[in-house]
Image 1 (cartoon, rainbow, N blue to C red):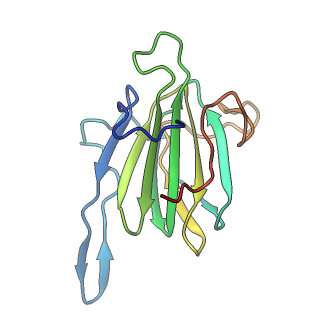
Image 2: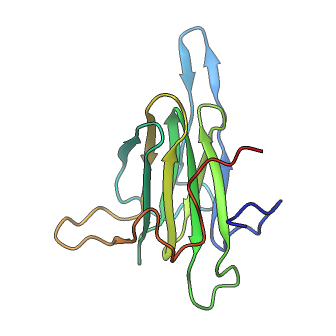
Length: 160
């Protein structure tokens, strides 16, 4: 049922890094991504994007680019779908809940569809550190509508 099995396999190539928060009376500090980490590939750019409560931004994938998503304010649901032919995790769905209550970075390989939904009462702020700079004339970005039937996932909240 739409990615809700107890522990679906992690999509091949996806990495999750828990973040350590260093707090004192002045505030807090978190290292999001370091070039000396084993899963770091290269630096393309850093950008910020947001989602208002309940807004879905998805689906898309990249042919070359790896993404490193970190939600630094609010909460978001990040969903990945492996549509890669020949992948050992083809058709798997992974859900991640990240943000102020779960500080993690999720690394997303090329050709894996991904999208996210703002799930907190306030705007969610996401930092992405992709491996490639954005090329405005020829973007490495391929999209499907958020509620497409081609991906077996529904964005509605599941109340249990």
